[in-house]
Every structure is written in structure tokens, then in C-alpha cells.
Length: 274
Image 1 (cartoon, one colour):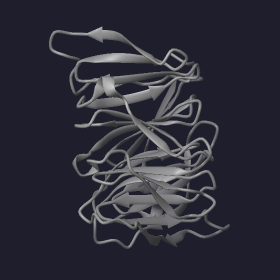
Image 2 (spheres, helix red, strand yellow):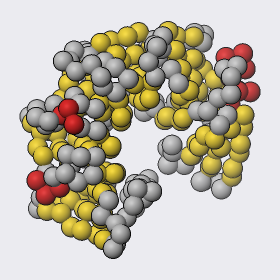
Image 3 (cartoon, rainbow, N blue to C red):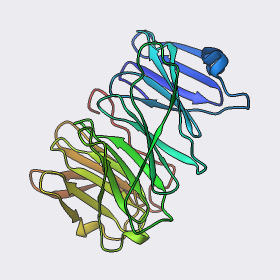
């Protein structure tokens, strides 16, 4: 993850810090930073950057939060733990600094921003109301207004408002039961673009509460979606990269190879807009 100047990457218990401003690299042992809060077993972490600038490292059902200095070096702040018997696969931090976890099943877990001196937080559960039970989270993102959205198999999107702290299901299709969400992205107008493995591309307008299935890409497997500052939406599937121009509502194909672009290809939006 990156804030535009500093990038953090985890490999096992090693945290690599890249400072693009002065072209320096630093590797530290996460467990040494955690001290007595470090797990006793071998650990592998996943980094998350919160809207408030805190760095989070997730290991299973536990999240560790850190403050970072101007060089990106972390200082341990707090440990969040979800008392769940089911695996946790995705985490997000909303605009108020509340941490959210989701995984297998219909339960979300949340933990508020810690008060001064608090080092351990037990996360609280919230149940999603749904007729489906065998579901799991496959994506997570934080919207520009601070709300958190999880992508769930079978039920579509689950949005948690910072005002109500309650999950709301956003159904994308009449056949959600066959849905696996690969990627989600918010555009400059607040629309949520959703790419799936089997059902193609969807766009949800939170202002009107409507969801549109993009007919041109029915049954396409959407691997990555990114939205730039000019309102263009780029989407990658197995065959090509497409650019959507919101002013003309048309798609332009950018690349196409004989064997497709492949699963190992992804799209990244740089801080300078490239």
C-alpha cells in the first residue's frame, strides 16, 4: 500500500518501507515493533492504509494499528481482535477511524478508534440480515464519504454507513447467488463500479439507489477496475483493457492480445494520475 510518497510491503514478518521522495529503503521486523503483542507463532501480515494515515497490518482475525513518521517508520498503537471461529479475509477502515473486518459468514466485526493509552480492543460483532448463510467476503473498500463497502458472494455489496453503523445490502443482480466479486472502485461522481467473475460489470448509483448491468460486458470476468481523476474508468478482463468515457458513455478498447492479457496482469493508478 502507498500514500503517494511512502510504500509499505509485507513479506512474512518483514515490513519493507520505500520512500520515493529520497529514494531510500528500509526493512524492519514487525514482531520487534510489536514487542509483547507479537504473535507467538510464525506470522505473515497484510498491510492496509487507513484514510486517517494510520498503517494497519492484518494477521488472521487480528489487526495491529501503527502511527507512522515522515519516513514511514511505524510505532505500534493498538491491537484489534475479533473473537470469531470463522476465517477473516478482508479489513477496511472507515472515515471515522473505525476498523471493520469481514470473512466467512454473515457477521461483521468493528472496533472504534482507541483512546489514549488503550493497547487492546475486542471487536464487536454485527450480523448482516440475509436469507443466504454460506457467504464470504471477497473485496473491501472505503468510499470518499468514509463509508465502508464489502463485496460478498451471493448477496452483492454490503455497505456500512458511518452515521448508522449498520450494514445495508445492495443487491446487484437477480442471480446474485452465482456472484463472486473480484474488484470494486468508486468514481469521481460517487458511483461504485463492481467487477465479477461470471456476471460481468455493474455500476451502482448511491444517490438514486439504482444498479445498472453494463450490457456490453455480460459474462465477462472483470479482473481490475480503476477510476482516474478525469472521470475515466479503466477495466481489465481476460481479453483486453477498456476505457470508459463518462461524458459519451462509450468504451474504448486499449489492448488485445492473441491469448488475452492473462490472470497475472493488473492495473494501478499512480498518484500523479498516470
